[in-house]
Image (cartoon, rainbow, N blue to C red):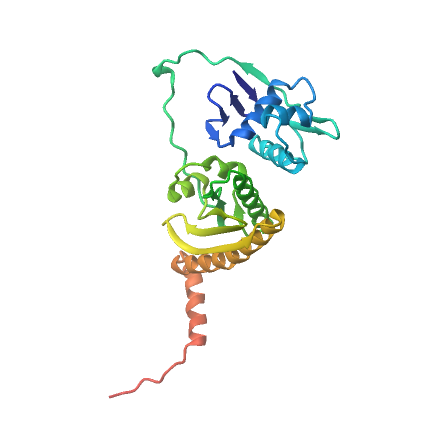
Length: 292
């Protein structure tokens, strides 16, 4: 069965969520949650219904359930503020309220009917510094860290987007690369950005390590790399701490990289070059010519 809503296609047979021609990476539990909400969209689904269907009746905290619902919303372009597709009914439960069309998948598809994947167009670079934050890789065996990593990336994107001097790619565009081996240069061409931030999350016991790398997309050169170690006590405090550190470290690096790029770019205006020579003569000492 395929459920079609907005620009999404939810395929229960292949266990895939598509946004247009792209596959949206989604954790198994979140997929099952969306599946249950879509199948039961004619009624309100209680918290107990979800726990019984997704967790086989195991004890699950309200925070864990809320996290899964928020991740499901994020995967389909919804949010807790909008609740355009998944609505929360206080003290009642949840319901998928978006318009849905059902479509049966054909038993077989001829090879000739499968269109060849067209290469994505190369987007022009904007005038101001442009950046894409890719989903961080979860290097831990604990799948719970997947949500922590995704939430931290979303916070970093939100924090960077507040700067009017930066052009930051939206989360829905960058998360299409989640779980894929990517070529940074190709990402830069496809998203139309000059810089790419990638990273990873690793958990050991009660400690977590986050690494980040800022890469110049046109050449693949590393501009900045760092790691952050902390105790995994309050997950939201840790996300805020790491987000602030990453944003604080990135801004100076982007500024420095843009200055160096501007230095290497020659001017095409003779008038501007004339002003440059006049200014240069004001700073350089003029030595009298010595005859020999």
